[in-house]
Image (tube, rainbow, N blue to C red; front, side, top):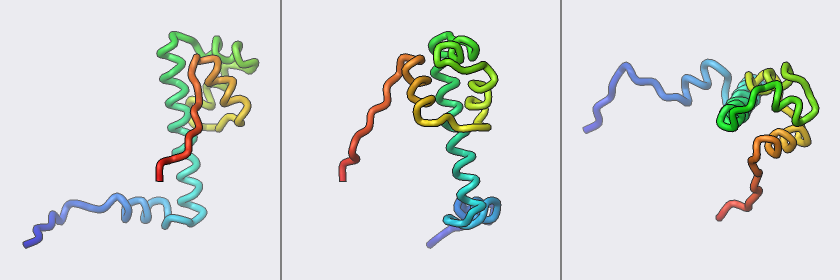
Length: 101
């Protein structure tokens, strides 16, 4: 016997209603925005863990504090070379591996 709670809604249907179906331009725009925000939060957390200010990180990679702030807020995504300079300045590394099938 299946019992359903009328107050529950699936995340998929909620996302479809709010941002469009998977594959639509609206959903893709949301995905990109969410990705930029998550990347920014990871950079922010790593910077704080290193007890580094935005200004210090900016100086280490040759940019300005407002650029770092916009990255951390998810307003912009850094280019690949800037991303790698940020990772290096924070003492992190990127590992590219082939997934196990």
